[in-house]
Amino acid sequence: MDLKCIFSLTILVSQISLSSTQNVNVVIQGETSIGETDDNFAGLLNLDLKKKCLINAIKAFNPLRIKVGGSLQDQVVYGVGGVKNCPNFMKNEDSLFGFSQGCLPMERWDELNKIFNQTGVKVTFGLNALLGRNRSQIEKGLWVGGWKSQNARDFMKYTISKGYKVDSYEFGNQLSGAGMGASVEAEQDGKDIVVLKNLVKESHPDPKTQPNVLGPSGYYDEKWFNSFLEVSGHDVVDGVTHHIYNLGPAWVSESGGALHGGAKDLSPTFVDGFWYLDQLRMASTYNHKVFCRQTLISGNYALLNTTTSIPNPDYYGALLLHRLMGSTVLAVTQESNPNLRVYAHCAKKKPGISIIFINLSKDSSFNVTLSNYEHQSRNSRSTDVAKPEFRGSKDREEYHLAALAGNIQGQIVLLNDVPMVPTETFDIPTMEPKLVNASTPISIAAHSIVYVTIRDFQAPACA
Image (cartoon, rainbow, N blue to C red):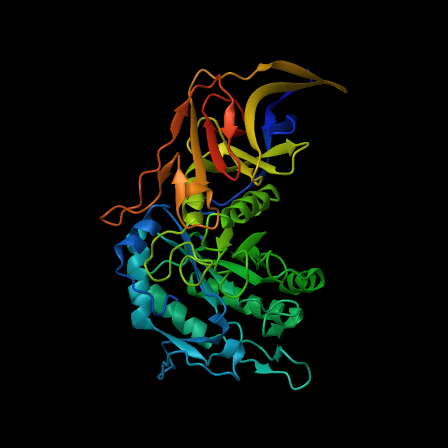
């Protein structure tokens, strides 16, 4: 007997406005997943690592993946082995990004690993991919020549000798295609990442503890990426990484909404969450495994205030997503209202599913009701069988995020009407859901973000 049942969740939404009421139909298919994310799906040289708020903000994710790298990573040497002079970065208008070459002292690497171990961080380390190359005399911005791996070799040797754990090494930063300030030809970068892969294998002979190799960590250029992967070959690049900046010109290994430190009146405010959380979930529906926010700390686009380490609004949205949304992504169809974004995953803590609603409208709120549909196929015939409106027997768990006093460009976020600010001892505030009778509609206020976990919705993909 060829009998298959596909269960899906239909969400009926009534739009509340002064002019009309519009019904919106959303279908969440619970039979199969459409993607899987990694479970850790978020200025270190001068950062005060002793701030309790910083430590607690990192601990709350349990674990958080941190990428050590960024714009200046291809100008960093590591103060180990043959490197005897270890200078700080200095302003130099003739150098890449306006800074001279700088150095990561091993004493600072020791301090960083102390906090990494203390907070359970998973580390992705961005390696300098310009070492050994020179500026082209013919093409502006192009760097030519092969990568010199000795400094990276010495760095890995030191890291291993100290027992520090690096989850992955990423090769270079924004060198693909036309690059950002500097670029490397795809063929050369493909050859050099093979050198890095062999170095990682040599340094970590046990496959179980061997760090992944990631790249090319730049803006997507189809021709460049295809050539890079063709040259590097199979089983070299463990994760293909690229950058996304929607307000400026695989893994998303870097994204911050706006380039060059972010937008002062946008990136550290509540309104940035509409872009950030939508981008996170949209990437997951296309089977991206990891999404790294630029940055944890440093710049306007940081999750934490650079001066105080106090969380910005996006931190709380990301923390809820990390705690509630599991790695299995469910298909969602939202037919008629572009202002309401809906994404669903299996719940992080079984059973059930977790849904995120993002209301982009400043005027309209929504009342959401849920219905089940069962899709049956027997041999070549299939039918959709409408089931009664979904009414769970358990209370829903709801988390409503909104801006204080409706000011979406403010930096205070409310969770279920409670301001999210660290405690007097700099602990991250408790983030508890409100329990709502499952027979009532889900209320989505204008300009709000709502997480909902339904424990008794039976999605076979989440079993």
